[in-house]
Length: 269
Image 1 (cartoon, rainbow, N blue to C red):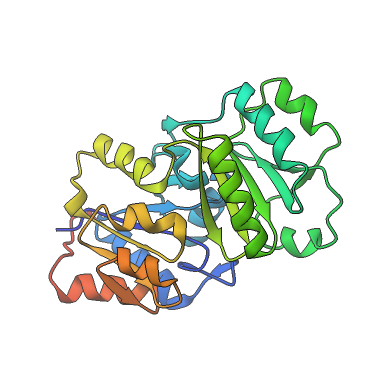
Image 2: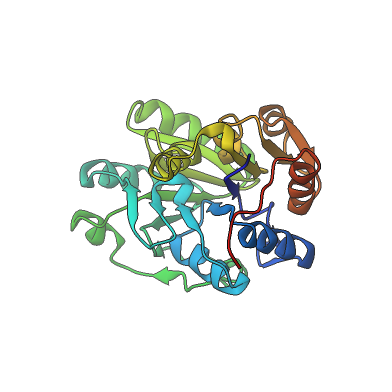
C-alpha cells in the first residue's frame, strides 16, 4: 500500500508554474483525506511549498531546493545541506563571468545582482520576491548559506557551462537541468531522492510504499527509487525511461494507483 505520494511542482502539479488545476487539486486533497502522506519535492524554495500547501488547505512534507532542505509536516527540519563558504565563493567567481543570468539561493531567498531585462516575467513564476542586491559577493564571504546557484540561458550554452563546472568542481558540486533553460548547481550528492530518503526514514516508510511523479532531469533519481513512479508525457525521453509509467496529469497517476488497489483509507475525518 502507498503511504506517501511525492510530486514535483513545475511542469507536473503546477500549471504554467502558477496554479494547480481543479482535478489535480481534488486528487491531492483526496489522498490527504485518506491518510496518505503528501510531499512536494521541488527545486523551488521552502516558502513556495508552504504557500502551495496553504492554497490547497492541507499539510504535508517539504523537500525543497532539489533536496537540499527537508522539512516535515510538523515544521521540523530533518535534513539540510549547503555549500561551504569556500566553495560558494569559488563558484560565484566562476559563474558571474558566464554568459547567463545567475541567481544565488538560500533556504528561503533568491538573490541576484545583474540587471535582468525579463525580471518582471521571472518574478511571476515565484510566490515571493526575488531580491536584488549589489553586495552578493560580500554576503557570500560573510557565510551566506548558499544551497543552490541557478543559471538561466540558452540550452546549448548552459550545457557547456554545466560540463565545465562539473569538471572544475568535480566531487564538490552536482548539477542538473531542472527546466529547458535552467541549470541548478548544488552541493554534491544533493537530489530529490536523497531528500525523500531522509524523509521516509523518519516516517518508517519503505521505498516501495511511496509513489512519485515528475517531469524533469532533477526528478530522475527519485523516479528510480520506487516501482510506483510516473513521468509526465511532456518529459524528455530519459526522464520517461526512469519511470515505470507515463501520464498526462497528476490525477491520472493517482487514479492508476487506485485502480491497482494501492490506496487505502486510514485517516479519521
